[in-house]
Amino acid sequence: MVAETQKRPPQVEMAEEKNNAAVKSSNRTSLLLLGGVTAIVIVALALGLGLGLGLKHHRHDGAATTNPKTSSAPSPGPTAPSSASESVQSWRRSTLEYDLDMNWDINASPTIRLFNFTISEIQAAPDGILRPLLVINGQFPGPLVRVNRGDRVLVNVTNQLSNGTALHWHGLYQNGTNWMDGTVGVTQCPIPPGTSFLYNFTVESQYGTYWYHSHYSSQYTDGIVGPLIVHAPEEATTRESYDFDQVILLQDWYHDLSAALMPGYLASGNENTEPVPDNGLIQGTNYFNCSLYANDSGYTCQENSTRAVFAVTQGKRYRLRLINTGAFTEFDFSIDNHTLSVVEADSTLVQPVAVTRLPIHVAQRYSVIVYTNQTSTNYWMRAQMITDCFSDDNPVLNPDVQALITYTNTTSEPTDSVDWSTALDLVCKDLSPSMLTPAVVEIAPSPNNAFRIDVSFQIGAYALDRAYINSTTWTAAKDPTLNQAVAGLKADNSTFNALGLSSAFDKASQFVISIPEYQVVDLLINSLDEGAHPFHLHGHQFWIMASGTGDFDWNSYARLNTTNPMRRDTLTIDAYGWTLIRFRADNPGLWALHCHISWHMEAGLLMQFQGRTDLMSHWTIPSDVLALCST
Ligand code: C2O
Image (cartoon, rainbow, N blue to C red; front, side):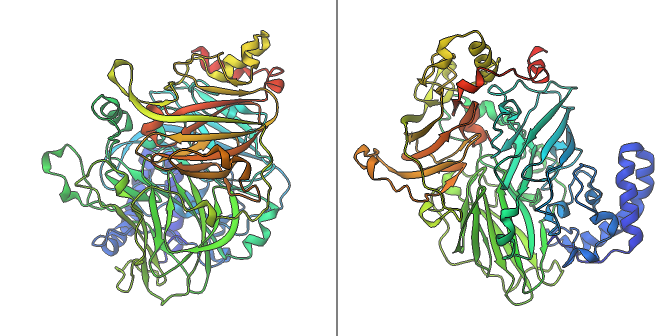
C-alpha cells in the first residue's frame, strides 16, 4: 500500500540495489551510482514539492508483479533488499518494508529469525529539519521485525553510539527470559558503546501488533523505534477480512535531542510543562514549512521534506496496524471519507467496531480495517494531535499531521477529501474500553490480592520536578533490580521473598511490589495529576476492570464485571482518574509498570512487579547479561 507515482524501469531497481549494497563497501562506488538515482528523485520532487508529498515504492495488488529479487521469501535479516529508495536520503527506510506480504506463512513451523541491528547516530532531517538522529542499520524508522509465534528471535545489537543503549520488545511476555526484556535499571545494564549484545528469546503464547524501542532514558524519542509483528494460525479468520496488511507508525517529533530538552523539563518551576512537539511523523516523514523558523533560529531546514503516500486499489480492504511510537502526544487518527473498523487493540483481537476517529496514545497499537469504496481520487489520512493535553503552544507546530491516500497513484492535492465532522477529542482519553470486546473470550479470574498506588508530581530533591508513585520517584538502578533480586534470593535473603511492597530495594527510587507465588493481582492506579498518563505493564496483559474519577468505591469491588473485559498492555489513566487493572502475576522476574510518556518516565513515573520468586530463586542470569554491568 505504499505508493510510487511512476513505474521505474528495471535498470533503476538494479542500480538501487547496487547502490544500497555499495553503501557498506565503498563510498566511491555509491557516489558514482548516485547520478542515476538522482534523476528519479528530481521527478519525485517535481511531482511532490508543492504538496510536500513523498514518493514511495508501491507493491502492486498481489505479490506477483514485484521484482522477484525484492520479494523473495520474507527475509529475517536487516539486509532485506527493500531498503532501496528513490531518494538520495539513504537513511530513510523504505516503508515498503512495512507493507506486510500477505503470502507470509502463518502456519510455518517454528524457526530461528536472526536480525543484526547496528545502532548509530547520524545527522538527518525526517521532516526537513536537520538534527541528530539515532538509527538502526543507518536508517529510520527501525527495521520490521516479523515472526511467527513459537519462533526464536535473535537480535544482535551493536552499539555505535557514544552512550549506552538497550532494546525493549514492547508487549512480549518474555516468560522465563526476563533478562531479555531490555529495560535499563530493571532487567539489564546498558549495552556499552562499542560493544554488541545478543537478545535471544522465544515468542510464546501471543501474537499481534507490537513494537520495539530503546529503553534507556528517553533515547527512543530520538529515533530507536520499530514495528514487531507476531503471526499465528489463529489469525486465519481475521485475515479473511482484509486484502492488504500495512504497518503505520505515528509519532510526535522534536527538532532537538531529548537529552537537550530533558533538563529544562525537570527544572523546578516547570511543573508539568512537557516539551511540546515541533511536528508529527507518519512512517517517519512529514512536511515542515521552513519559513516558520527565522534565519537565525539555528536550525537547518531542507525544503524538500515530504509526507507519506499510500497507494490503494479501489474496492480492497486494508488492515492498518497503527503504532504510536511517540514520546508524548495522543493522536486522533482518521481517514477522510472512510470509516475505520477497529479489530485489534494492542495485541488483543476485538469484535469489529466502527469509528470515524480513533484516539491512540503513546505506545498503544490498533488495527483498523479500511474499505476503499470511495470515489477514485485522493484523500487525507490524519493523525491529529490532541493539543489540549499540551501545556503550551508551539508556534511552529501544525498539529494536523497528514499523509496521502491515493486511489490514482498520484500525489495531487485532494479536492474532495473531507475531514469527519465528528468533534476531535479535547482531552487525552482512550477509546472507551466498553467499546472493545475481545474476540477470544476470557473470564477475568478472581483476585488474590489488591494494591493501590497514587501517582503524583512533586518538587523533589535538588528542587527537580519529579514524578512519584506513592513516595518513590524512580531512577534507573545501577545494579538492575533483577540482578539484585536473583543475588538476594540465591543468598536466601528473605526480604526478597516477602509478599507486598518490597523492602529489599532502595525505597527512595525503587517501588517494587513482590508476588512471590502465583496470584491474580488487582492494581488500582490512582492519579492525583492533572495530566493523562498512558501506562504500560511489561511482561503481561491486564484486564481493565473499572475506571473513573474521584475515589474508587471499594463497595463496588465485589460487583465488577468479569465476563470478557477488555485486555491490553497499555492504557490511559485519565486526569485525576483511576483505573483498576487485573493480571495474572504468573511471570517470573522484575516487570516495569510505567507511564510511557518519555518525559514522565524519566521524571520517575515507574514502578515494578516482582513475580514468581519461587521460580526466580533457581535462576542464574546469563553471563553475557551480567557482563553488561561490569564495564
Ligand atoms: Cu514500550 Cu517500558 O515500554
